[in-house]
Length: 151
Image 1 (cartoon, rainbow, N blue to C red):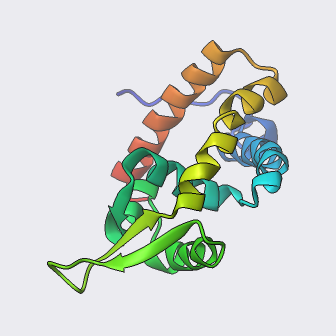
Image 2: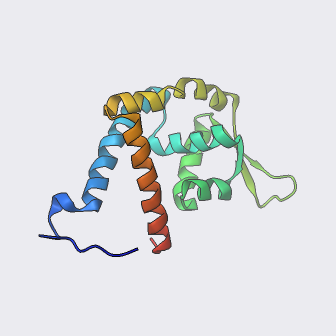
């Protein structure tokens, strides 16, 4: 990949990728916050639930790797979801050092309420689905590049 030189003022605020990402992050999470509040979920808790709705049962380490969260960030999320009756922690029979996270019946049932969230987010953003899919592809590339760069 060739490096491109930025013409003009390289420190202009509006040209900074970090600024655009930060503003987009705040704006999109504000929409999620409004939509998730009736479900009793924060956005980070929603991400945990998405992973569990997809995989049913995950070891804490697997969940952390999937969400790219360290245990210090993940543990309080899991405690709140467990206190809310949505998940359970279960020690593995074959290895008591390993803890699995499983959905409770309430956690499974919450999926039926959450299934409309993605469509509601798309509608609230007022951006075409094609544009959002393209953005997702670009952000996935950016995240992979940042990981390779040691971020």
